Length: 108
Image 1 (tube, rainbow, N blue to C red):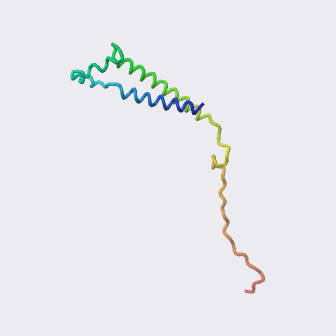
Image 2 (cartoon, helix red, strand yellow):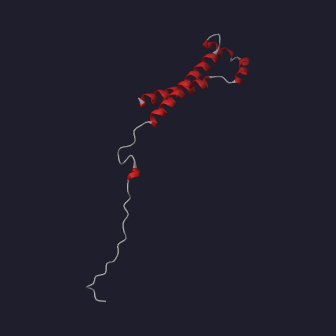
Image 3 (cartoon, rainbow, N blue to C red):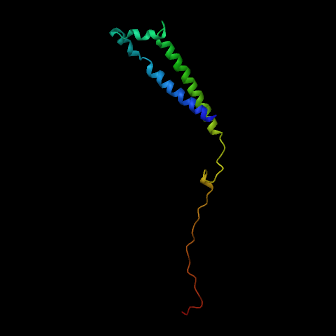
């Protein structure tokens, strides 16, 4: 399920970026006087502003909802069971320095 949500999350993010880049800014109205005014009629008489802004709002809502769901799923995952996943329980071996033993057979 997490893999499916991640794929949907990626697709929504790409679509959201695309819709944001398609939208015209506030300063784009000045370009209409130079012949670019007919580009807004593709989406109907209301223009592209309503369609693009509503679609962007829906995609943003879906994006945030999926973000919360993925975060919630990741926070409730099982803890690692393998010793290689969690190294906090590994004890380090400490070598004791070698001490010289005195042999009583050696004459002094």
